[in-house]
Length: 171
Ligand code: CO
Image (cartoon, rainbow, N blue to C red; front, side):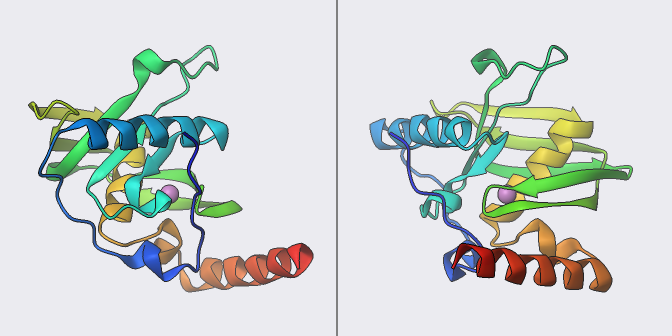
């Protein structure tokens, strides 16, 4: 089922999400819905809070070298903890909760994450480049943060201006 994605400045996006305790059918339904919603919106990542559910769950489905987004590359991440991080990468980010705005953001180039899968099995894996960036972006959502908070003063100003223009055009 496709769920509604909430957008900035909805205050719900500032919620600090809670750990998943039950790896049950309702979690599986949430993850399935998040996947469906993400694809429907042409996204590559989505955190549960973006569909209004304050649980530490996120999905990422990268686009491969052929430009395809295959479900076999889908990563489901529950209760993530970044346990190691190194390097710097600057990557242009966007967000389904901040539609039509893209800006360069600085992140760690490589991170090691401890997390659970949908069945409650624990994993520790290292990710680089795009996957590292996407994970940091989505984990920020779980902590109540958006990528626009990481912009410099001037870029943030530029965002506010474009956002107002967009809101006006919609009204
Ligand atoms: Co986002």
